[in-house]
Length: 134
Ligand SMILES: [Zn+2]
Image 1 (cartoon, protein in one colour):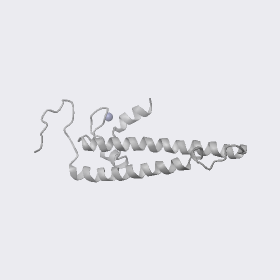
Image 2 (cartoon, rainbow, N blue to C red; image 1 turned 135 degrees about the vertical axis):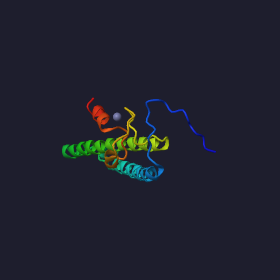
Image 3 (cartoon, helix red, strand yellow; image 1 turned 180 degrees about the vertical axis):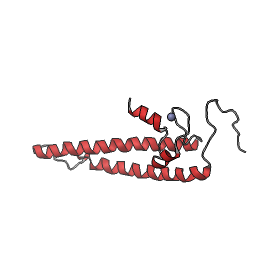
Image 4 (cartoon, rainbow, N blue to C red; image 1 turned 60 degrees about the horizontal axis):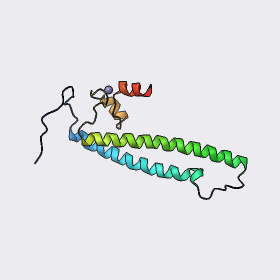
């Protein structure tokens, strides 16, 4: 039996995307999450600081610089991947709770144009810009 939640808080939009739209978006996001996690594992292996074969004792300054650079590069990518993973998980959660496409901050519907470009977004363009600018 389905439970019908009648009470919906005021100021909240009842507009929702139909499941015919959400199902493929959910599928897409799940697939993306999988890829992102894989990429993260791969990039962690590329980090010279985590490489077991690393020559610690007699590394030349050149090698050391290359390692530093490699580490900075991989950790920047890893951080970006981690951010995307969190965001994608968030979007998937919002699909599950029926709030996909609704801005987290203002509760308005997010432009479909924006959702097509950033299906993992949980903020409207205005609020995303606000958060970026802080
Ligand atoms: Zn908003």
